[in-house]
Length: 507
Image (tube, rainbow, N blue to C red):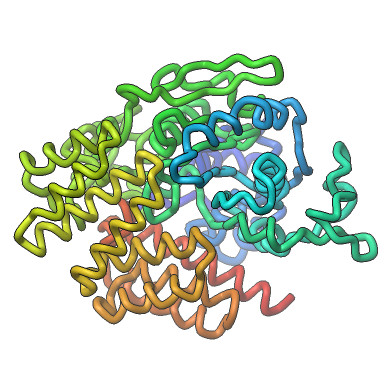
């Protein structure tokens, strides 16, 4: 079912031939004068030689990942667009702190983080507003589709050009100068978690990616080469990733496509932001039962009848994710199994009004251990959507005490540990999940991501297991416990990580 790209010789004419296929795989727009940019990107990944030797090289996931990375801008600087950060400092930050006073945590997402300057600027801003000993837990998720950008960002080492419109590098609370380099303070660096995420091909919002119940999302100048329809679906997904009352800050290239539903426009002196409606806000119930990648959703909206005729390996089968059918993953039972509807309604109603104690008494009173465990996990995911991550983590830990042999609970526990920086416990949880199910491909993948920071050999072994498990499955089949990711996409992600590890070994 996979469309094969045409062979050619790497000329501008060849770029025109490849354009429909590459646009369909990346969501980018190469019409008009943008075609020459595609040609330049193709040259940068040695397309000319690849085509002459083997036309099928174009079909590989690594080729597309490298091409997409070449076509994205990885250059940024600290506190870029000072007016945006002034609005965050004067208005958004205080609003978040007031809303989260009872749980004393802040969860932010820098989508398309490039070299890390933006998420680290957020972490510094939060530290300036709260103080170093505030007792608040600040977590900044920073995602990008370029593994080289992520590796650079994790090091937290910057040159003077990254500070061209600020003097924050002179503040010894945050940076230490070593020669011509500025080294980020580990206290700030540890607030930021860098993760691979392709906004058009991966599935979000989801608990496994940490993209649920967020207080603030920055999506600035990332979609400059994306088609408008693709950007609009991305913004819909980001609405689902925010808690009620959460904030969205867009760049100049996104603001013309600002969402018209689900948000209240907040025009401030320094910037315009979008605040998710608190009451009656659209959430996962408006999304597919098993959310598909953004590009798949765009294809389905534009041509539902032809959706299955040209289905890439990173898209789940249409029947597993038909738009508007059934309950969402957050509102479905554990492992996608629906719980008793009447009982769940009794639990959900007080929880929606933040009467959590009442909801939890109802769960505690369930006699069946299995049913109680499933509803407890279901309730934990609802709490995540509401931004109550600390309470959700408590529910998962209680579920593990009651039923420690539950794979899904172990996976959620591991995700929480990674987000909080407890990587040792996260690794133990991933391993416990694998003890319960050796064929849990998503656990092998996340274990590899942890291992690559300590032992590349072990990480590569885990990734080879992922390849073996994926090769045994239909690429369009859904990976269990992976929130809508299919085996074809998981294999693509594993290849990207594997190649990045090999490059770091040879560097």
